[in-house]
Amino acid sequence: GDSVTQMEGPVTLSEEAFLTINCTYTATGYPSLFWYVQYPGEGLQLLLKATKADDKGSNKGFEATYRKETTSFHLEKGSVQVSDSAVYFCALRVVTSGTYKYIFGTGTRLKVLA
Amino acid sequence: ETGVTQSPTHLIKTRGQQVTLRCSSQSGHNTVSWYQQALGQGPQFIFQYYREEENGRGNFPPRFSGLQFPNYSSELNVNALELDDSALYLCASSSILPVGEETQYFGPGTRLLVL
Image 1 (cartoon, rainbow over the protein chains, first blue to last red):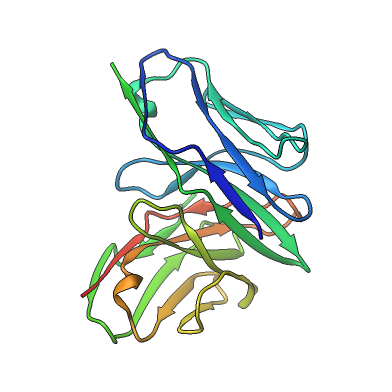
Image 2 (cartoon, rainbow over the protein chains, first blue to last red; image 1 turned 180 degrees about the horizontal axis):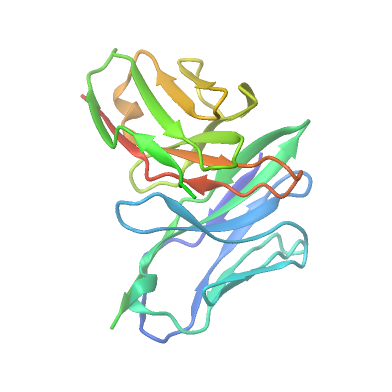
């Protein structure tokens, strides 16, 4: 079945370090891929998305490229800040017979130390 | 532009009771999706409503049901509550057109505790 696998956390980095959070997926058809961020006590916020192979989503210094050949959508940022501390979720959307289905990973907690 | 709102923010129920959670979608959005997020887990898709009809469903039993109203707001109803239903319930609104371009915007959630 369709699934999303994220690297386990927590990931702890120093400010200005390089960030990579791995995400791989299994899906039939051609899913759209998303990264969401959740700050403590809040709902999810869309961070970036990609709807087809080789698309690159980017926002607030974060980037992710839709790699169909490796079924991956890894999240990267060149220089993290303390304010980036949050839980990050990778997600996919598949459409089957006109109906939508969304699958999220289990989330990766990021802690950035000053 | 008003974002997605949910009510109540917190709720405590006992096993076997019924609960109704409410969601107001973002202005301009015609689709609402509901998710269950257990502590330390990712959101699990419950179902989606478009034009007042269910438009997709995850692996949840029939005691999880929903409604969408003409103003696109929505309710999630859960009957015969079980302890495992304790979770954060998230609502997300979106516009289903153009096809393939849907992006969901989430509300802050309702935290349900079943005792």
